[in-house]
Amino acid sequence: MRNALSAALVALACLLVPCGALAAWAVHGLADTGRYVGAMAPLSADPAVRDAVADAVGDGVVRELDAGSARDLLGPFVRDAARSFTRTEAFGTVWEAGNRAVHDALLHALRDGRADPGPVTVDLAPVTAEVKRQLVADRMPFADRIPVEHTRIAVVPAGETARLRTGYRLLDAAAFWLPLTAVVLAVTGVAVAVHRRRALTATGLGIALGGGLLAVAVAVGRRLTLADVPEPVHRPAAGVVYDALTATLRTASWMLLALGLTVALACLLTGLRGRGLGRGHECGPAVRRSREWRAKTRTVAGAAPPACDEARNGSPQPPVAGPRL
Image: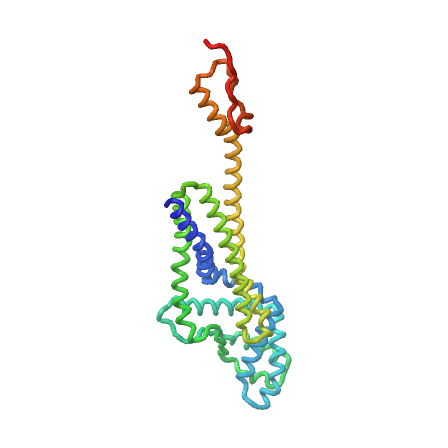
């Protein structure tokens, strides 16, 4: 019963380890504005991200133009100006400020139950103003007619806001309780086991397996995320963003794998060393039986002491006859 209970507790603890790591990453990594902006800031220099932002800004500005000659004339120039702007140093500042604004708006929608149930949007007005300034500086006709309005792009649809808010609350609770529960179950499972070294070895192997499964889940999630991108031309940019956001989670998965294998290997080596020391101090069960047999039959004092060779032969040697006292 103790072994069965220990196996169940250890198995449950190892199952909770990757789930707890995932919840902690979502709450303490993605939901932290500083860490999120720090992870996204270097992406302003990535060509795929630049092209995706330039297309989004260019299309958004063109949609704001009046239909007719102005849109037909300025459309290509606006898109070229947006693409040129993403290659400047000013784009890095706008990119960081935009990501911070998006993250703050998203957190406000997830944490505040009284927030607007509508979609979470990002305002592209600062980027539009910079594109207009560059076109005016180049003396492009009709450039001053470009409206600098709050061009908003929805980052979270209206129908997904309530579901994401519920999921965030569950993750917030799971980020604290799942790792704590996993540690308590693992310690309890090892403590109640009859063979604690074996239970600790199994725990290490289970943690390593959980880390490997977490790494596989990250890879599968990347494939599914890229498959959901509606425009194939923007999939490279989505892949770069996904890799930047999940870098900490991938590191955590490899750390769990290394930790589990280290614990299991240490238990295995200490077990082998303990067996070797035991054999060095005692010749084995056969020698003990030989000593008991000699004591019961009251062998003579001049009989040879038991040796390890008797254990290797598998049976005790008969006592050596000698003069009785």
